[in-house]
Image (cartoon, rainbow, N blue to C red; front, side, top):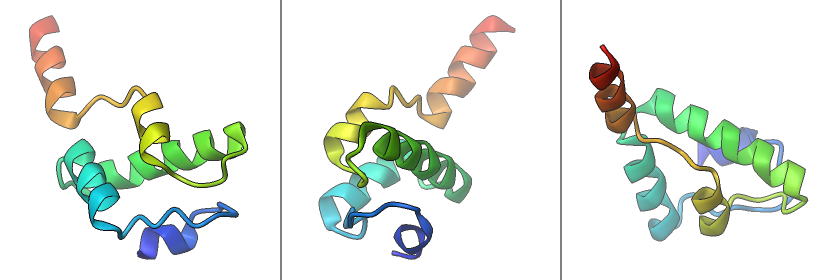
Length: 78
């Protein structure tokens, strides 16, 4: 909930609701830095689209790559 309080969005996203909280946890893989980056990117997208809140659909549209997937890709390149 503390993240939601500092996001510059006009509409409530209800990030503490179980479904979206679980989704955010999975996308960030439980890492606070990843969660912060994810929410910042989502907030920018929400503002640009005029939605002014973070929704499951908005998260789908972010094209977010989970940290473990980014690591796999980095090792594949090396």
